[in-house]
Length: 275
Image (cartoon, rainbow, N blue to C red; front, side, top):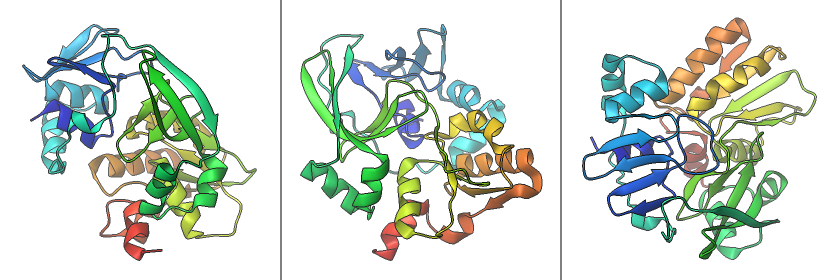
């Protein structure tokens, strides 16, 4: 099974490519410089900072903290029909260790980004509240832009029509409104979908995982709430997150995925409504 496709299905996307080597911010830890490599020639990965590497099974075992058998089952359940092409990403490669720099953060106004939000049926006003328009460079060669959603370590989830990934550090995003109800989302597009749908007028707190492998970082927060609502994706990793939260919270957890039954996630449900 192709490692690049597996990583893409888990929302990990490359920063650059040099011949057979495709580079990522490590999915196994937080880092500022991409040091996780996939060699497409032999379909193997290697994390230079950890000194670890292996095949697809080894990676899933490491990411999910599961057995080889469970990793095989997980991979079989994944839908990898949507192939990933690195050429779709807008990065120009100049060196093995690109120098990353944020040039500016402004209010979202670029027509391409507004068009992207509209294509996802997301309310522009809600996006303005929680997101920014980011401009950044790798190696100072070319400037790229996207929709930036800040996390708790001042890193950013970045989205555009051609890119989906993390800039700087990976972490959860917590938004506090002095509520005793917490809503947990897998991605910021699901969070914005929830805000767009206006499912409640009540004041709530929010945690956005930004990746299912960040689930353990939100667990300490859960003890502060009387009600925890989960809006996870309808896939194995999303269901596993719901299971982990439920085991931690017991009766306080409400699995709200029945709202978008038969859809992959809350944003797909929103798009189907055609709002």
